[in-house]
Each structure stands twice: as C-alpha cells, then as structure tokens.
Image 1 (cartoon, rainbow, N blue to C red):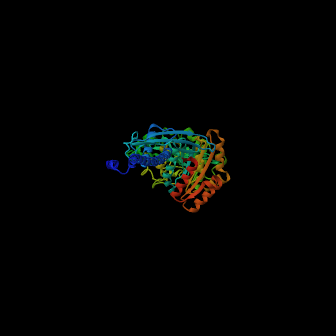
Image 2 (tube, rainbow, N blue to C red; image 1 turned 30 degrees about the vertical axis):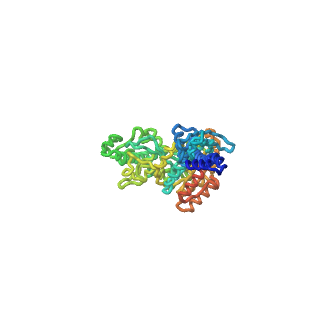
Image 3 (cartoon, rainbow, N blue to C red; image 1 turned 120 degrees about the vertical axis):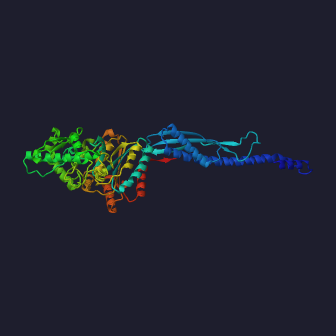
Length: 568
C-alpha cells in the first residue's frame, strides 16, 4: 500500500498523466468492491454449508429425540447440532446460537402421524479480507438459516408380540430382535413389545421359592382339554403315578397308589431338596419336612411310605389332605391316560387332547391358561433311582431344567432359567432380558405358540396389533396340531376377529408375519412359509430366510412398514 501511494504522488507531480488522479481516487474503491464481492461470495458458500449442516442435524435430532425433550436431551441435541456445524464450518468464531422446536401433528388422513422438528442456527464467521479501513464494516459476519424442518412419520402406536422358537439356530436372533425392538421403542414410547419363547409350552418366572430357597418356575400352555384329559395339571406335575395295581379292588388299589406316590415324594426331598443344603444330613432333612409313620414294615397295603414329606406353604405337597385326596380319587385314572398319551406324542398338546373349538373361544383371556410347576430334577433317572419326579417331562424343555443335569450343574438352590415369557412392555431393559435367554430347544409347536401369545396381546391397548412369528420352519410333533388350527379352524382369522370384536383392546388392525429362519432343511422353511402365507399371513408377510443379513433386512422392512419413516 505505501508503494502505491508513493507512485500516485510521483504521477501527480509529473507533467504528464493528468488522468491519474481519477485513478488514484477510483482504485481504492475498486479494491474495496472486489474484497466485498469475494467476501459476499464466500458468505453465500458458507450459508449453503450451514444449511446443509442444519438439515443433517435436524434429521439426526428427529431420529434420536422425542416429541417432548428433557433438558438433558435438549443439551444433547444442541451439542449434536454444533458438531455438525463445526464439521461443515470449522472457522466459526463462537458457539452457534440455536433454536430447536418440536410440534406433534396427529391423525393424518392416511393413518400416519408425525413430529415436526424445526431447527434454526446463527453463526459468526470471519471475513477473508481485512476491511477495517472501510468505515462501518466489521471483521466478522453473522450467517443465519431459517427453520429447517425434519418430520418423523409413524403409524399409530402398536403392540408387538414376538413369538420365537428357541432352537439352536434361533439363539442368534436375540441381538437382531434387540436392535429392532430398541428402534421401535425409541420411535414411539407408546409402542409395546412382548416376547413369547415357545417350544412345547412357554416357561414362566414366579415369585415362589422352592424348599432349598431357589426360585420356582412354571410351564404354561393355553388349551382347553377334552373332558377325558381335564385334570388338575398343577397338582399332578410333580407326582408319581403307576398302572401296576389296576387289577386290585378299589381300596387296595388306592392304598398301593398312595404308597407309590408317598415314596416318590420322599425321594424328591431326599435326592434333591437335601442336596440344596450343603452338609445337611438325612435325619435333619427328615425332621424338617417329614413325619415318621411308625416302625412297621411298609408296603403297598399300608398306603404310606415310612416317611411322609410335605412343605407347609405348598398345599399340593400334602398328598393326604382332604383336597389332595379328592383330586387323587377323582382324577387318577385320567392322569394315567394323560401321561400315557403325553409319552406317546411327546407333548400334552396333541390332537387327541385339544378341544379346538373351546380353545379358540377362550384364548383371549387367561381363563384357558394352564400353568404347572417345573420341578428342578433330572429328566433321566440317575443310576440307582427307580422313581422319576415329574409327570410331564416333555414340556418346557427350553427352560433348561433338562439340560444342565441338576443338582450338579444347575442346582435346585440356584436354578438358571434359560427362557421365559416377557409380557408387553415399553421398557428397553425388560425387553433386553431376551439377551439372557439361552433356550436349548425341546420341540416346536408353532401354532400353539401363537395361541399362547394371544392373551399377552390382549393386555395391550394400542390400536394396532402385530404378531411376528419366528421359527426354524419345523413342527416337531406339532405339525398335525398346526395344520388343524390354521387350515381347519382358521386360527389367524379367529384371532383377528376376536381382537377387533373386543372393545377393551381398542384395536383397529391386526397383522401377522411369519419368518422361517435357518430351517434344518431348506425344504421345511420354504414349505412352512408357503403354508403360513396361505392360511394366515398372506403372501407378502411370510418368508423363509437362510442367513442373518436376510433376517435383519426383513425385520427392518417390517418395522419400517409398521413404524414409519423420516423426511425433510
């Protein structure tokens, strides 16, 4: 600049160049205009980058935020927005001024609703040239954007029930369901999710404790048995029965049956309960839970074993009470039939036992729900034992009692349940209990798993109900039952009609999805998907998939369809 002024002075003193004074006056103005032009172009470019940053930030906020943000959530949203702005505009001179606003719009004509996220920002950026010599101009510039809108669309809140078969291959479904479930709950905290881990019945946690202090569990099934199979399953689940004495007269037969049952109850306390207390000797066990029936020689004719054992807070453990005796005398022969057919079909849920019409009528409440204890004992008798300790040993094997061989690896005082029902909830921590489940299979009765899920769905009040059935495609012993329920009795149509007809559910829509994942043979997966498509879900909502990537894509597609999408 000094050199330019010197040259101008020289020209003014020279005899030639009379026009130069005009240039001397104009050149600074031209330079200033050039600087302002370049800075203006740069400002426009920075404004465009700011608009991009705010637009992307608004989408990110809409994905992570809620319709009403807490103070912490608002601070996180502001920090996220500032990170986007600093990425696009690293030269900003101070923290951005941000305005974040949300507005919920409900009940659009197409059944959608959305939350409108509005984000505006103002930032200070430096000018490229030093224009301090020009009066009235600052060295920095404020750039602002108008509100950038991002809309998070969603369908009406829904109740989702995952009906999952716990086979070996389906264990890897757990993290996938976790990811999808978290997306559903973040999208709308009114959504709710339930997990029904079915096989041959569905395990339940209880508040009860066994004699050794360990938690007790139940096996549940939703079924109305035919008359000849109607027994008190809760009573008979941990009793021993025999048909060896059917040729005796009634009194002798009853005494022999009671002797056998009493001996079996004693064996349970001696073989399992006592092992739950390290160091407990035989006589301590007897004094705590048993009474001595005398010193006579005991046999079938006496109707009692030498020791009769019971637990005070468990009424059915006292087999000689009036209530127990009424059940034994009234149901013993039916219990023999139930057990024999259970052994034949490897399940209580077989075609001969199920009253289909009554089951379909009563599946919408807990009225037809049957639960019975899962004694934490051997599935196979150890050497030297001639007594079993469970009558229905094919049921709820996915619970794990048959896998770890108690008492050595899964002891009665600290039993480990490997699968259990999770009722409808919008709490991620509750849904994430699925990650703790390591069910080990034990048969698959797919349609009965869906039936068991119905009363859980009925506990929700959202207007959309979505059943997602995930199976390995095979019905181990349950194919005839599934065929009867879906083909002959139109199970899915009955569920849909029943849910919509009951005002307490507030339901407007019921949807079913069926996924056959990693079938042992591809044929079974494809065949089962086609069967469910024809008789339940429709062709667009039943698929057979063979790898994790396909399953993730399919479930995300379901959730995108059911939950909603984002738009700017």
